[in-house]
Length: 212
Image (cartoon, rainbow, N blue to C red; front, side, top):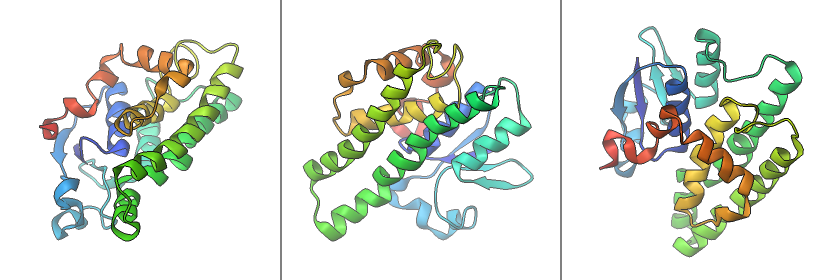
């Protein structure tokens, strides 16, 4: 399989984690967002939307990280990223959606580029914008972690789940945008647990070949 991605892309980061947790190797194909390679004809022929990541399975090209991760879960069910119990699955999906639906889309690269270009936002404004939505989402995430009396070392249970796959790249983004992470001790503890695992360490942005 070929993974078209960019080292700093949060959606690429989450997919790298999921692939690593599943024990799946891919050929790394860097798409440099800094030079707008994602908008050029060569990449648009792979993904007409012009977004990373994209996963070429050899039979088809999959786009949109939530869809790709669902495909991975169905195609390679072990180890599972979702609990067996329906209520627990809903809980894990909700945690993931806080990040994937309500935080990340507002803070992603094209939104920030639009703010810079059309509203003259400087880096202080950009950091404040990102901190607003990260803080709102992380407050909710932290509260849900605190309310789960049976939670283990991870966002749910004692093994990483879909929630952690989504959370850790957003923690990385929070640092990049100078958000004070000490206000969320439970999230910080989850990050520590995740970063003990090679699947998370090897997926980190600065470990990728295009990070140089």
